[in-house]
Length: 218
Length: 230
Image 1: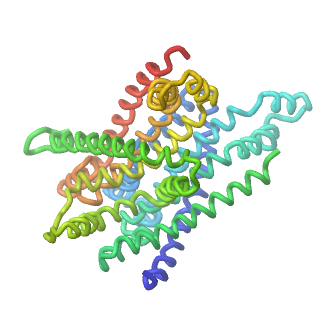
Image 2: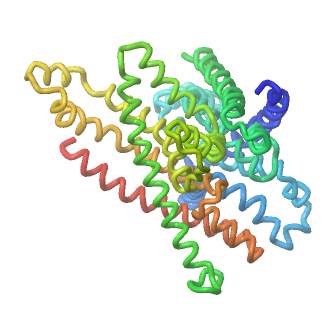
Image 3: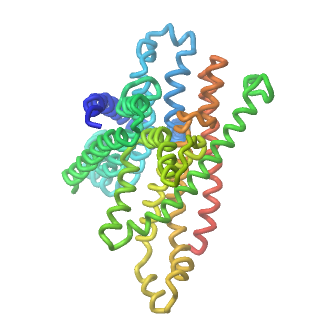
């Protein structure tokens, strides 16, 4: 049990890297699609809705497999410069995670934008502030505060989602745990250690979000 | 399209059976989850601190640990645990548990943690006056739970339970790692032997999407039924 700890801890670094990179890209994707969802143009609106529907309605495992195993099959794709990124399982996993969390984030942000009281925007307008500044300085900060609790849950879900990276040969925390289980046949001990590390990360994220909520409350 | 033909040349019939398997596992897991919720919801609502701790640690641990890790625990540890229990009764032969049972049990425990949270929230949001009124009327505990609390709770719980169902349905894709032939595993096999992963995994995505779409339609009807009068 103790001997497996160093291996599992170094695998935790991989998990954390996967998590932070996918959240970073996912946030941008989410914000972009949330703005598209609020667009009055019906085609743009439907496109953004379709994106989030497809990514939320299919398992993450399918999405990773399509990106990792599927895209490499297209001959033309392999000759483009994108192949440098897509041939690495590491980046494939991050792209799949980012697209997935982006879909959920876009829903969270959209509902946050929609629950902003119109009075705040009207107040800005009556003060003669331009639409652009209202959007960047009023709507976005308020929406971010509104969506913090839901986004905290999404971060925890994504952290659990990174365990799927082990299915495309990446040695993250779950991947290493599985390797140790299958070589030592001590499933319960390894589960306790690896599960404990995951729980500890959940605990940290949970408290961090609570702290942020308090800090940004108004 | 010929890849999806039924019969020997295509993968249509295999994928159809695999889809049925996914549905079967999801429903079994959901029911096992309800069973767990039935045990752990009272524990979470209990005033006894020790019982409360048990209830809380179940939901916290399961919701904080990746599904895949739980599945590996059951896959590698399941038959060991059963053999251990069997050996206490004097049975020392090797026992292998069916992948369907291990899989539905693992997913069921995960689904149960989410269901527990849903039921706890629903019961807590019922007006306290309802409990007091039933006590004043002298209703038996069983009667007031099933005839007063339950109908109101279900109305509040169904929208959230439909989320749990979606999570459960998508989680079943993970038990493909144990070798149970459901949609994901069948697509993996088909992709391997035809060297056409893009098509088969995209088709798997379509299958999952239609399953979630259809189940949403069904659940919406249930929601209407249970929110009569509101």
